[in-house]
Length: 301
Ligand code: PSU
Ligand code: MN
Image (cartoon, rainbow, N blue to C red; front, side, top):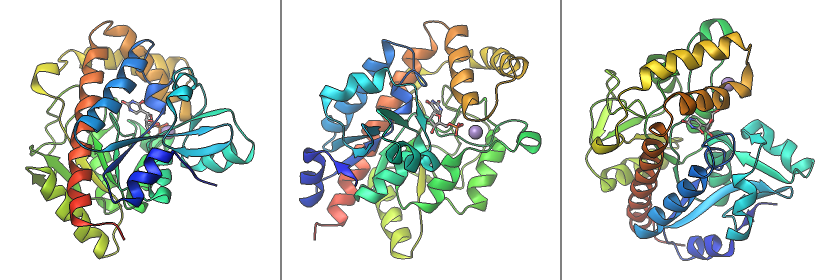
């Protein structure tokens, strides 16, 4: 059922480092073209440069894929169907031509394939106003249940970051600040919210993950701040407008995140996109170093 790319299955069999990547962020639902293609190339290259094999996740012609052949990359870049974990069975069962996997679907596929490190830009979380709408991303539950290390630049500030952190605590997901005491806010290094634990390097993350899994635990979130030089200070203004637009347009459910991301990209024209690419690439690089450390601790066999 699960379709592993030959390079991915060979790496796993040999006990080499592998890093899973989601596909929603590279599709029409994440970044605008042509930045989405650049983001994909830079993330794949960053994983390789740091000693791991990239495994892009997606549903292609009804097959749940871990590792997508470059010949199919264009189909992901132009993909319009968002697949969260609950949608995986639908996309596979009905043979969808292209399903773009979110964080929740990607960590589920990664775990099923035996891949223990995953990189994204920003995770989904508790939406502002969730006390009324109940809109809490399935990413949080998937992070808790699947024993995979997720590397993310925190979460975008259009979410309720304080409640997102509370939710991660409730679900027993350790949040590790990578060289930081704060939960990063995607375009900004600082959110004013403290993370419970700070780690200084990939070896520490690997040691914590291995211990957590030895005790039967689930996923871990590594909060990796955007590099200083790439920070985007003006996000807050764009954000308020984007949220107001979503409310006025009556956007609900799975459509909220793509809608708000699109509005922020429009409002910050030419500035949010390079920041987004830089942090995604940085996360992919850090994820690869963690995967290399884990492979060192967990020899094949
Ligand atoms: N945050 C971003 N960019 C993204 C997403 C989140 O900054 O592209 C995508 C990811 O695929 C994430 C999904 O898993 O949105 C969350 O969607 P929702 O809020 O509907 O759970
Ligand atoms: Mn939602």
